[in-house]
Length: 229
Image 1 (cartoon, rainbow, N blue to C red):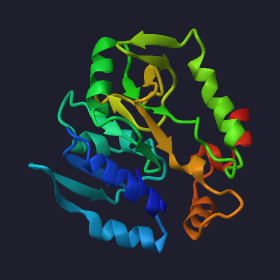
Image 2: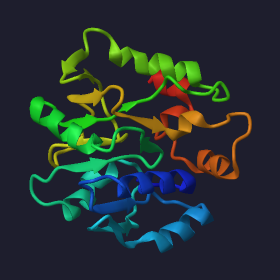
Image 3: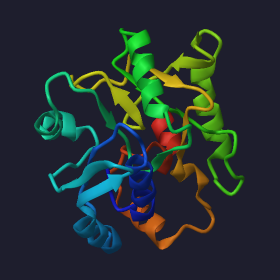
Image 4: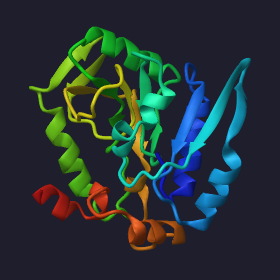
């Protein structure tokens, strides 16, 4: 899902193109107004190849105001086969994991049939001090990795955690729910690119996004208000 953050969307798309098992990639735009993003979206649709495998990038310009709209407005239903597994991710989340991360998430879903989705954990160990909410992010994420939520899975660990629209593999198309869900631990993790920004020196793209973002959509646009509920 995309909105205005063209540099992040480009990184996310390239990572997905390189991932074995992903063929059709749908960029669902949420009312972007940033001209570089609109130009890119207008040019990126079409076929691509990965080794000997052919895939296609689709751009959907539905009137999505909120990331969860694609569950309720038929966007996902139109793109999926019955009981097909699928990935949803915000455009500012990029895998930072071994190349078999999708296979790993699929086997985790098989191992835990009660889960509606399995997501990549989010790295917090390398966040730069230039990011103003660094400590708040680390504290927020640590609440999900307590001993009561961690469980072994093969040579690695998974933990119970709500998963919004950050990168996750969904078991099937159902009404949106944040849980029950699991996330993986190192090395099967992703980077939330927003958390690496220089808060004191935002780029033009970042300033545009935060001016235009729908209130309440981005946790880290205003984390204090978000956490207070």
